Image (tube, rainbow, N blue to C red; front, top):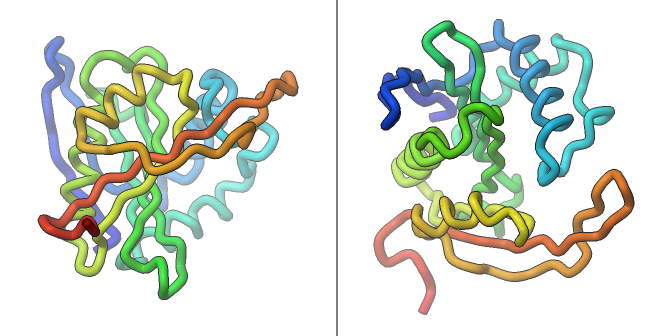
Length: 191
């Protein structure tokens, strides 16, 4: 169950993209994308120095995603085969939280605002809906990240809590961290 796709799609501007699970042989490319994202996206929790540098470690992690029934690591590729988005659903790994998966996502700056985020989110939510036992997808977002919040709300996410001064930028400024969630099975949300 830890795999997805491949699925080809066209964005509103005519660009073709492919969505699928990351492959072990893409370890170096996924690390490069993670490093580029950490350097250019102010709302990603991972700092550039925290991105692993060893492709063998990343390869092992990709293999863990593939083997895990409640986790998936998705890549979006442009028509030249370059990674333009990386997104994951991860399991908290505890029996009492087994109904939840946590979502993390990064899009290449040049591809933001073009509909790619919607495609990635839809693919992840469809996967979560089909995954036995998964009822809830949870994520965290900086409240100032308005485009991301609008996307999450369009995809059915609702506020699920607020962690005050939970995120600290590299310049030392503290930011709140908003929690959002989406129940992926009909009737799963508690009343």
